[in-house]
Amino acid sequence: MEEFMQVVQIADFEFILRRAKETDIDDIVAMEEDVFDGVAPWSEAVFRAEIQKERGHLYMTLRHPETNSLVAYIGAIFRPGIHEVHITNLAVTPHWQRRQIGTFLLTYLMSLAQQSRYQRISLEVGVHNQVAQTLYQRLGFQIVRRRRNYYGQGIDAFDMAQLLNRHG
Image (tube, rainbow, N blue to C red; front, side, top):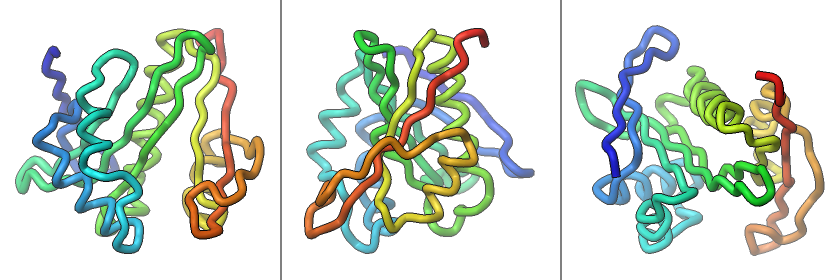
């Protein structure tokens, strides 16, 4: 796998954006537990399997250049057969939330999808996660349907999707 790394600026801060590696997994799981009330939705084994799948899977990390601490990450599956990119994960550490980082990662991934001629981008979000829903709707996502008990323990999710501009 070719190493990808890029310095990006988001709201007056510089970060290092790169493809996730197995060495990122412990930090990703710890951040998920921090972001999702003490429970990481995915286990270390699931993240390891996803990150090892180079073909059709893309996981990107955003790290602070001075401390190397994980600030955020995003994951997606590219499904060429149905011309869709499905966002599997997006998390921003609490300290960096509400600073345009989620917006940056989503628009970055949407741009990649559009450049690769994908027609649709989709994701799931908890019905009670109003902050994330607002972000997604601001970026053009619409609720497609409600999935009952998607996260277990009676917690529902919304499927959200956006059709990408085919002319861009």
